[in-house]
Image (cartoon, rainbow, N blue to C red; front, side, top):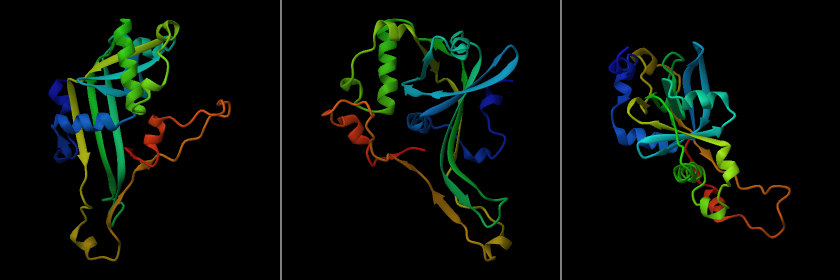
Length: 218
């Protein structure tokens, strides 16, 4: 299979986008990606937290994780990222669908090894989920860094699909009695709940307060 075969859409090709800015927006909105690869000729799919850092995707996990070690060896892999953003409610079940953005990236991971680069990558991951948090907490210890495997997945080969349209009903269904339209969906941050063992007098930090009530990507 050629690179073009892997990135060309055969189903609903009009939804394809080659806009790198749109890809970056999806990757910046995403919180979870699914890595697919093979172990002993058996397919494996693993979900994990991700963050974009320029022209690469960062992921991390324990050095004791078997699948992380396999990915760190540079085996061929793909990464799928999806944002579900609502329903397209057509006048028939057949024409009903979803509002979404999805991408599949192809390549391989490499480990981030040096301490300065690993610390920076972990800061990027932390800030992707909770902006402003890095300055509120201590730096990782040598032991913690040694127990953490950080992976870098270059953004080189990819396909992007975006569905934003209205229902595409047949003329007969359009004249029928069924309702049709769009139902946008989003997630919101629902307050902050202190840990039961939190010492008295410690206020909710600015990074967490900034999230309260903010709309978050799906």
